[in-house]
Amino acid sequence: MESKELFLEEISKLNVSKRDYLERLFKYVPDAIIRAMSYRKIKKDQFIIRSGEPCDTIYIILNGEIVGLDYQKLGRVYYFMDFAQMYIVGDFEVFAENPEYSVSICAAEDCEILAIPAVLYWQWIQHDENALLLRVKNVMSILTSEKANDRKYMFMSCKERLMKYLVKSYTCKKEKADGIFRLNRTQAELSDRVGFNVRSVQRSIAALEKEELITVENGKITVSHEQFLEMSRYLEE
Image (cartoon, rainbow, N blue to C red; front, side, top):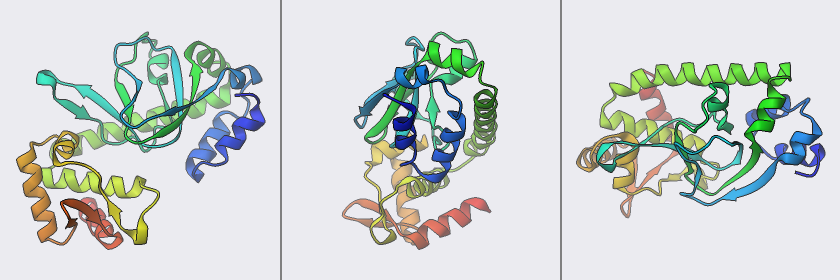
């Protein structure tokens, strides 16, 4: 990145919450850190970080959805569900003094990111009280929220997990023609994301369609704004 002005110009294009957080976080960042940043485009399904590889780079997610992967026994993949608050990835390990990444993270769709060498990031943030406090607060908020969500998620049925995934997907998707969200996932992909087998996912899809909480068009799930609100209310009860 050539200058702080150019960096702030990129940040200004983001949604309000992400823009506000990153502007405050990098308020006093030295020019040397900005110049060390590099802009990258990551294609869908391309890895950003891989578990076990050296933790040498911190990434700022400008645009696009990311997903965390954990490869279990028999080759099964577990997908971490909530990355809505993850504006920066790779620095949990830096704070924990872990030399290797602990999870794998890939792009769920085409992404735009900024990369910062981990050594420079750590040299800067530990001497910038403003940035350090903001980042620690964000990290603790994420960890606390994830722990609470993990407990709830553990006891959810396949149908409830599928509803949660659809609600999250609807919320994260920026472009929805006429308020309609169309899910571009196979049943096998949904099975991996909710942690149940394909037969259970099929039964859950049928149940949600019967209750008119989703619509299935040509084998694809669609969710209207009214259906999104109804599922949201159900999950909050």
